[in-house]
Length: 100
Image 1 (cartoon, helix red, strand yellow):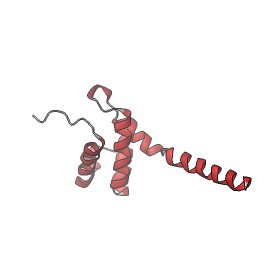
Image 2 (tube, one colour):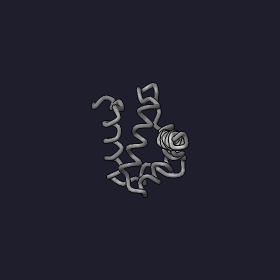
Image 3 (spheres, one colour):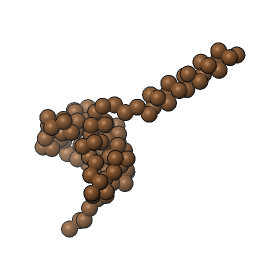
C-alpha cells in the first residue's frame, strides 16, 4: 500500500512539473512580446505565446519564433497568422491601444 501511495505521489509530481514547464520557443516569443510601458505584462505575453503556438500552423509558428530570435521578419507571416495574433491578444486581455 505504501508503494502505491509513493508511486501515485511521484506520478502526480511529474505531471505537475511537465504541465508547468514552458518550452524555449514559447518563452522566447513571450519575452519578445513583453512591453510593460504599454501594459503588455509577462503573464499576458505568455498567454499570447501559448495561444499562438496552439493556433498557428507549424510554418507560421516557426516564423513567429524566428521573429523573436531576429531570424525572420513580419512580412514572412501569413494573413492567418496575423489574425491568430490579434485573437490571442484579445483572449489574453492584451491592451489594444487607440483606434485612431
